Amino acid sequence: MMRMDILQGTLDVLVLRTLAASGSIHGYQIARTIKERSEDVLQVEEGALYPALHRLERKGWIRSQWGRSENRRRAKFYQLTGAGRRALQQEVSAWDRYTSAVGKVLSDVPSGPTGSTK
Image 1 (cartoon, rainbow, N blue to C red):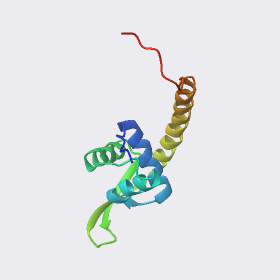
Image 2: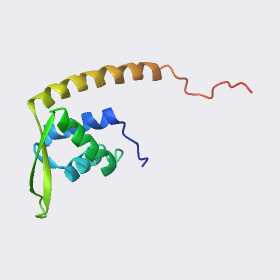
Image 3: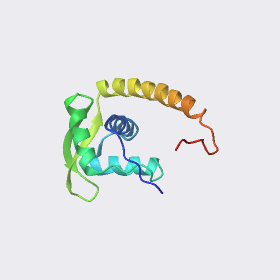
Image 4: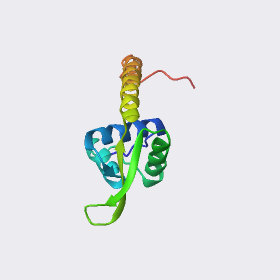
C-alpha cells in the first residue's frame, strides 16, 4: 500500500480527533491509532508527531502528564482540553468544506487520456 505524507495542519486535526476518541494516550499510541484507522495508509513519523504534540500543547488544545505505559515504561500521556474540543470542531468543519471543494474539482477530470501539446 502507498504511504502518504501528512501535512502539518492535517496531522494536527488527526491528533486532536484521535485524542477525542481515545482519551489520555501516549505518543506511540496516537501514531498507531492513526495508522490503524487509516488502514495503514497514513503513517506518522516521530519527527512529525512530537513537534505537533508540542505545538498543540503550546496552543492549549492538549495537555500532558507523565505516567507509565502498558509495558511499564515512563511515557508522556496526552489528552484534549476544552479549547482543543472547540478547535477540533472548527477544524473538522473546515476539512469538510475543503474536501467537498476538492471533490467538485476532481469530479470534472476526464477519465481518458488527455490531449497534450509537444
